[in-house]
Length: 214
Image 1 (cartoon, rainbow, N blue to C red):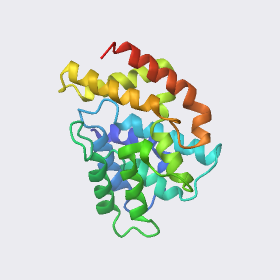
Image 2 (cartoon, rainbow, N blue to C red):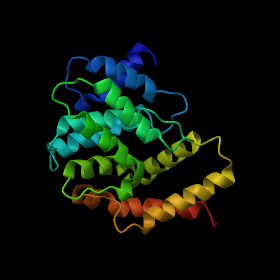
Image 3 (cartoon, rainbow, N blue to C red):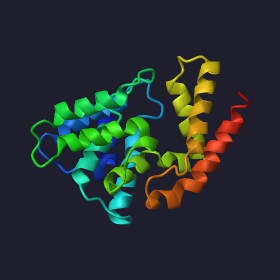
């Protein structure tokens, strides 16, 4: 990633930054990671979208209790992303622990725990933890995007799994979509559920139908 491109990415992430000592070096590293060639959805733009969601919760929504931890969890949550591995979240959390070690005023284990929770959004226990609920919901807000935006997300994910044969990808994607539709609620919080639940279910059903019969 060029210096100017990295600067553009970091500018889009402005709601997630504070200017803390050492922050710029981390942002430069993360900008490079999110610009990796194999990323078609889980890249710079994804973090930018979460930055906008963070700002919405802070300014027009319910607010954050521990905003700094949420900001850092967003920045690091997909820092390591290899589509065919199942431990990306754990490795991203470990990277956050390493890079944030010694940071004053930051609960690093809280940041890591939030990142690890993204491994299974629907199974996360968010009872009494609105920050975690809103963080996880921001990560899946794309499901409730307008159809054209959702379709670009779905195509991006397919491109990330380009090494997987079509029949295997379709079978796995169908399982994912069906599992999401079987959930009582897609979103943990009312703030995101009220905005996205209906549209998300419509998008998921539409994509599932487009994949044909198993």
